[in-house]
Length: 198
Image: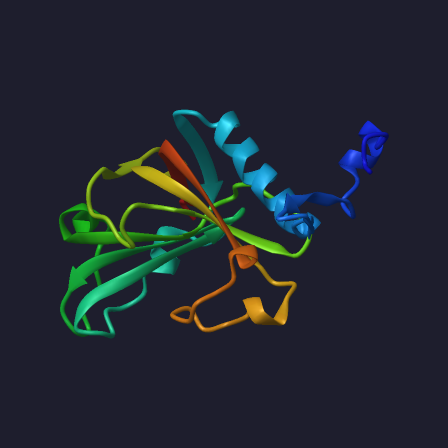
């Protein structure tokens, strides 16, 4: 029946993907297919390592603040597609100094990275193996910047559809296959975060 189908027709997003027991199966949502291709392409373009450099508007002194919660002081970095929080051990009301930051460092959390993956109706995140990590975080200083250097593995690209209502479910609720994509990767992130000296 479909022997004369052209190559152009085969590539159209509205075509059928095959048959099972004589029943034609509808093609997967074209946005879902694009999401799969986009994450696979990123993985091919970053086979081993990925470098990210970003500069914050605030100085480190402005961003630090005072220890208002017992135990930890968060230091946020939010610039140029990078959202990362560093946490430092402190006592209530204590004001940490730049000199003792390395010794007080507790752990880091990466929320967003500038991966550049964009397809219609999908959101993407690149994930670290654990939600937080404490190794391979270094603090440097130059004449113009205070620098945080982070080296950590990345293990997956996670994509979530925001198109279908059934995909907008609580995080712990089951979702349809068409609502998400996961692309495994084995990439080392080398990230430099600069705070200007003002």
